[in-house]
Structures are given as C-alpha cells and as structure tokens.
Length: 397
Image (tube, rainbow, N blue to C red; front, side, top):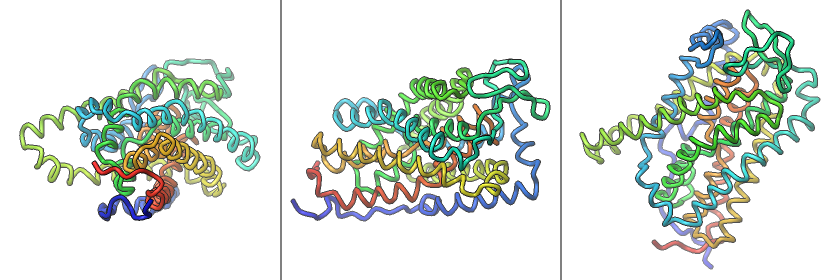
C-alpha cells in the first residue's frame, strides 16, 4: 500500500488561542501565582460570591459565568440533528462509545491510583492534607469521618480534610469520565479525519454525558473513598452541560432561522471561536492564584499528576487506534475515533471539580494539569496518525 497520505490538503490551527494554548496556560499559571502573592484574598473573595444552600457554598457565581462561556461556544457549533446519522456510521461510533464509557473511566481510576496513591504518595506527602467542600446537603458534626475525610472547621465553614493525594486522585477521576467534545474537533481536523463523523460523535457523547457522567463519576469517587456529593454532581451536570447545551441548541436554531446558515457559520461562529479559551484562561488564573503556594512549596506536584494522565492518554489512544485497525475502519474514521477517547473534556472536569471540591482543592488543580498537557500530547498523537495513514484502507467517499 502506498505511504502517501489519503488527503493532500494541509490543515492547520488558524486560531492564535488554539495554536498556542500550552503557552497561554503556562502564562496563566505564572499570572495566577503572581496574583496570589500580590492579592492573596482576591480569589477567596471571588469564590465566596456563591449560591449558598443550608449555609454551604454550592455554586461559585464568577466561576459559573466563566464556565458557561467555556461551554456555550462548543455546544452552539453542534448540529444535534446529525445524531440520527450515528446509526449509519456504525462501527466507529460504537468503538468510541465503548472506549469512552466502558474502558476509559476505569483505566484512569487504576492508573491514577497506582501512581498517586502508591508510587508518588511519599513524594506528594504521606501526611499532606487538603480541604474540600462538604457534600451538598450533608451536615456532619466536627470530627466525624466521611469516606477518607474528617469534618473540620475552616474560616467558620465546615470542610472535609482529606489526604492530598486523594484530592488529586479525585480530579483525575473527573477527567477520566469526561470524553472530549470540544478540542477533539480540532484534533480530528488536523489529523485529516472525517469531520462529519467527528461532529456526530461529539453530539452523541454530549447527550450520553448528561446521564453517565454523574453516575460513573459518583461511583468511582465512592470506590476511591472520596466524598460523593450526588446532588452537586447532578447540579454541575445541569449547569455546565445541560444549560449550555440547551442554550446552544435553541440559539443556533433561532440564529439560523433569522440570519441564515452562512451568516451563522462565517460571522457568528468566527466571533465566538476565541470565547471558550478566553473564559478557560480566566478560570485558570483564578485557580492558580489559589494554588500558587502549594506549587511553589512543591514544584514537582505538576509532574506527579501529569505522569498518570500522560500514560492514560497514550494507552487509550493506542487502544482506540489499534481497535479501529482490527475493525477495518478507514483512516478518516479511525483517527477521530481514537482522538475523542484519548482527549478529555477538561472544561467540564474543571467545572465539576470546582463545584464539588472547591476552587482551592487539589482536585481542581489536577484537572488544570489535564489542560496543561493536553495540547502538546494531542499534537504528538496527531503526528502519529498522519504518519500511519497507510495502515488503514483509503476512504474515497
């Protein structure tokens, strides 16, 4: 078979935010740490602007606003009418769903537990502790244990004190149960995959996430002896997935009806494109302004979290890509099928970790590390795909 690529078109990231996302994330880390030093109370005050239920902060309003604008531009791009085409796609959609929901969450649990809970536990600190939010609706007395945590009073608010490694572990779990429905559109495009199929899989995964994200996330958190705030999990899905999904669907339908599909794609989406990443970067500044002290005291923290995430991503990509070869998929279907499993929906993971455990939690930091390694790692996998196109049958459709 020829080694020539199946497509000759050159696809590149044209958006400056997407192209240099790793650089922007790095700058946000530095900016957030600096902000934490200059104005240490700012992030705390912003996180305190919250919706309270029974005296407990449930939804941080500033973070909720940022995260809505992270999610809405993604959802408004999706034509959910394309979901009906999924049945015609057959094997690639089945492969993606199987890897995303039957394999990936459990391999993430196992890999992150082995590295964070065993191999790196002494390096993180066997006695290192983290404060996370009390599960929504739970009112336990001081000193009571809940999972691996103990109820303590911090700044007049009841919190759970958990081992720091378990907090990082929680963030990894939330990443593992969040298949990508955003940047995978970029990765599939750069890998010269089937863009139409990618959109179908994004739509299907977005709908399935409404049901399975909370179920699998709650189950795995419970197995890991971590707080299982079921009400907050459901609330986070409603706020960070369902609300932007419904808003995106409704506004897409209204705008196309009023202005036409050409104006929607060429004008509206063009203006909206950088909004997701700008909102993400603002959120990261807030997160790192709160976690700067932890990072400065233990600068290798990022590395300890990144290693299991790196291994997980490569493993899931290899599983999806090799399975696509076994199933005799064309390259244009195999590339996005493997990419959507390998990458994570870090927007939802960050949102959920922030809501469930708090802006200052190790869980929130772990989800941010997912953003930090995502771009360079996925670009590496894109290059692997492009160099191995000849492994697959050519799709001439």
